[in-house]
Image 1 (spheres, rainbow, N blue to C red):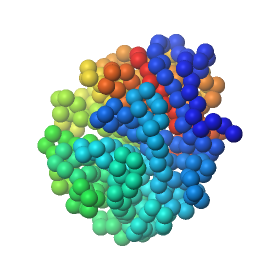
Image 2: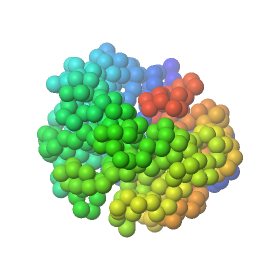
Image 3: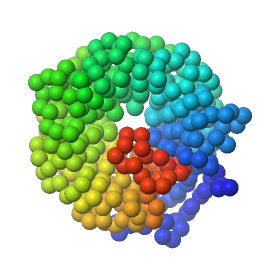
Length: 426
């Protein structure tokens, strides 16, 4: 039986790259099944909250479940403090988790269960939000959505109180549903009650991945669109999926929105507000036209800087001749951008590839210049899902080692053996 906790300290050949990084510690967490981390969050006391989902049923003490939301609290040295599991008899997936200003934990994702920890199921898959205390005791939980498939991809605490989440809805009984998948943005009060709910999109597939609050108490939302009608009418549809960036006021009404991309496939994964009140977005591109130039082959990491009105200030791509993709971005204390994802390339901007796919971390200056990059991996396939800067100035990413051959194109196809956490210094 595989150990539930494996600790590796700079073992020879485990984490190697032609570019240099000092690995302070590396740890994995999980059970006999698949344990799939999707988000890491830094708490006020320096501890870490890992959010994802697991089908390691031996971890669910006294519970016969299929897939459950799997939460882990770590101290700043990567030692497990405690873990928690939430769900019912069907599948439940955690995609995003935060600590609130009052020290509570808020976890969000999607659930197909109709019992267990859930109440008030709505459809096939519902958006699900839970608030817990520090010991993972549920204080409240709420289901959101309509009769079909709905999912939450990011939740944040609003500066003026409560929460807001983004994701997608396929439920035709939600107001203003246009068809296929639509952007779904919901504002909640501190108890999880809906203050307002917005659905934006067209007849194609449109999905929101990331949301951030702006200085005017509005919101910036990043996702992709395959639509050219509905709310996208009059916007340029360039090809096989474009980035769609929406600026909302504090009440969820659109102030401006724009599409970005080329003839290939584009998907944004993270948006953040910059110090000049503009926006930085990262994700993936497969284009070499439109807003993109210099494609190195396959997919590249795309980093796009917008001003506060959505005008492009600069656009940069990074990668090699194969597939490279970004999932997470932070702005560090010096104003540089740290990007985490994966690479399958061994040329171009990539210094070294240990296996078929390695976790890849990049540091990019505020003007878009690549300053540093590092691959982390073995002969297996690894990926970085989320990145943080810790109070001591070091960095941490959470990701996983793939089970079998990774399905890199699918939204939920990334299935890992264990949660994998690496603390490093460039």
